[in-house]
Length: 350
Image 1 (spheres, rainbow, N blue to C red):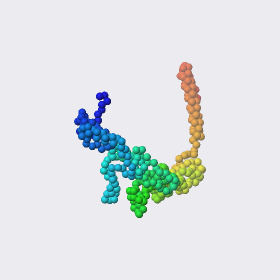
Image 2 (cartoon, rainbow, N blue to C red):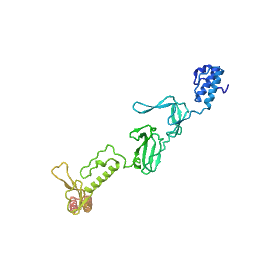
Image 3 (cartoon, one colour):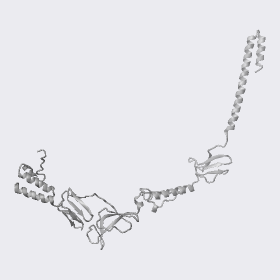
Image 4 (cartoon, rainbow, N blue to C red):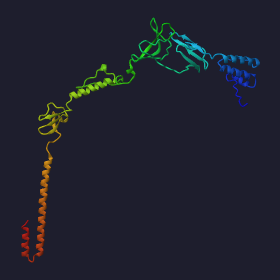
């Protein structure tokens, strides 16, 4: 009782009501026949029905698991529609676990949920050759790659075949059908991203003045833009005079705004300036440095200032002495006549 796990009526549900009779045994055998890939029949609920079910179960268990070999899976047919296109029509869905070896591709398939799946996964291994001869095989799957080592070119098969008398087809069984290989890349440079194959998008360029115009017939990739930018820089460097400074006693002729000139006579740097608000002038040289040295002038000013300070200091000291003498004369005087004489004597030194 501890290991009893009945599976009565898993596929034949009416048998689940007969679990305690011969019907439960017959239904359990029917479930096993279906699980083994066989076709269960309607057996009577008796010893005769049990015996017949056991015999069918033995046949289903010993028979090979429906392994099919051929160019197309079992349980269907190719039907050509009104437009001449082949369509695969399924007449009997495969059972789970059913095997089929595809002779066109050389691959083993297994059925699951009414679909065929490759047992070893989608390998997708490309065919590699060292020359331009296409791979000599008729079992080509859609999406198969072919790589040529001599030209670094990559091809892909999209399921199209050419016919000897002209035209194309998708049916490889037609005599003389030759697979069409579509070239994906021209060389290794096509699938290695560089400036030579990086396309420009939404760019419209034009040149003016001394800049060279871009070539519209050869201006599609980043490399083309880089070369054109370099040409523009070289043209600007050759035509522009703003990056040089003129030296001499005479100003340069026909200067551009921003041109620098160092006057070797006056030792002065000037810049050519045009006032945008003054339409009556063509421009002028404006000094941006002064050649006069302020050091000697400041030194002379300091000398004069120090002399003035010394003179004023001496005058203040003399005035202090006078006031001291007047004070002493006032204190020492005994009459008006002597005070007057002392004051006149002190003031005479001012």
